[in-house]
Length: 300
Image (cartoon, rainbow, N blue to C red; front, side, top):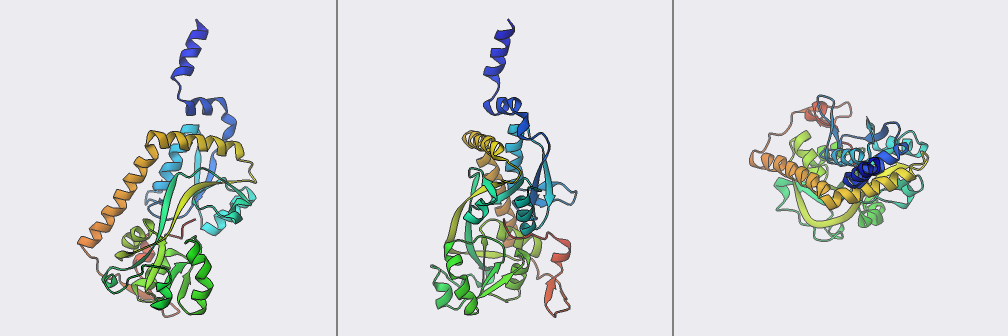
């Protein structure tokens, strides 16, 4: 009788749950997850709750495996340093590079991303970039946050752009958006969903995407090799496959795409006034919104 009950329980238990119950050593303690304010993928709400598309997707995976998560806010560069030493377990929203593979395991892809070029909405009729070379031929000044992956065309030409005075780098997305708002550059490069969302929510700037698709990339979770997370990565991959087949990840993606579009449409229908500016010691103008809004750093 006991054997029949046990067999029935095993048959009714989903595979992911059986895996988590069978191997609690995968995550006996909470997993430390590095993140920065990069809406709509991850950010801290005023009440202190960590929200966002990537946060929700990783939480789904962790719930499948019975793992607990400890989200720690930090700059992207520091997160990669801590992942190398094993002080951090996971980084979300990561693109694969050979350099990163030296110190991290990559999960299966759990979503994709697109990199595009943007202009201020009022200049959408004036600027048209159909191929990367148009940036050079039209002498357009490109604004780019320093830390991030923007595709092979950017990687191959960034030194040439810099030498010709067509590349303006900044520490984070906020500053790049501010420079575009005050005409310190012509076009801005970045994530197709996060960039217009951040510009609208944090700075009241409406961006228009240009037609050129700069890059399309698969996005992964990164796990510290120093922390010996290879067994955990295998379990995470299994959970990602299960959630993908169930449509759970696609449902989360659709939810946040609609949220981002709604915010963009709201500002398009009701254009905000130019944010009040305050002088900095170096004479530059800083929108007031930066001091009270999100500080969205660059993607991972």
